[in-house]
Amino acid sequence: MNVHADLSFVTLIAHASIVVQAVVALLILLSLWSWWQIFLKMFQLRRADRETTRFEDEFWKGGDLSDLYQRTAQARTGGGIEHIFTAGFREYAKHRKQGSTSIVTLDSARRAMRAAYQREIDTLEASLSGLATVGSVSPYIGLFGTVWGIMNAFRGLANVAQATLVSVAPGIAEALIATAIGLFAAIPAVIGYNRYTHDVDRLATRYETFIEEFSNILQRQG
Image 1 (cartoon, rainbow, N blue to C red):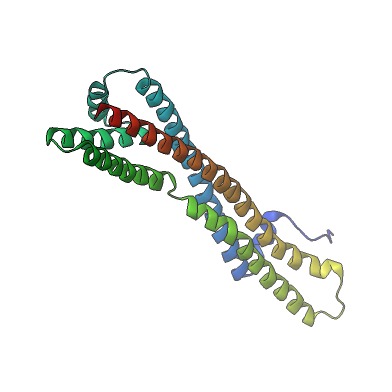
Image 2 (image 1 turned 180 degrees about the vertical axis):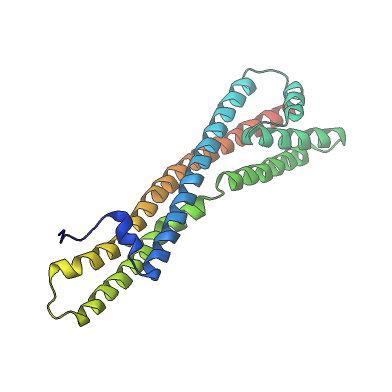
């Protein structure tokens, strides 16, 4: 007769208490959501970086800004830096037609670019707070499941005449699974949050630099 307890992952979860199973299910859902957001954000930031590089190369070729604006406005598929450029140049051209002073024209163009800049940064930062929440909360959710499971394991020993390691091991093992899954959900979320926050900051710096350089060009034209 096999006297060894089955300590496989599936068996431990199947025999765990309802609370521990609910904690494990919640952590698995949080992990799946965070991985989904990690991949979505990776593709989004890579696309934004490519579009920024492409537009900067085209912008600094020194062509006519009106032609560049027409092409960019008609494309409607550009990245964040193109939205900033079109917002600024649209406002600049509108005030030039109205005969506004150069100071008012430049100030309006800068405000339009700043508003477009903030919208683009908000889009890039979407879901990052969710990754931060998963990364910070998951270990505590797992710890709650572990504490609950260990409490049940020791409560079960009250009905055992002689407590041995064999009798207590399954209960403790199933409880520790919750902590392990909590760490499994938290670590990728924290890594993804830190990485993508750095990438967003780099893009934000490039956007701000472009706003300043484009403002100088508009000032010289005015």
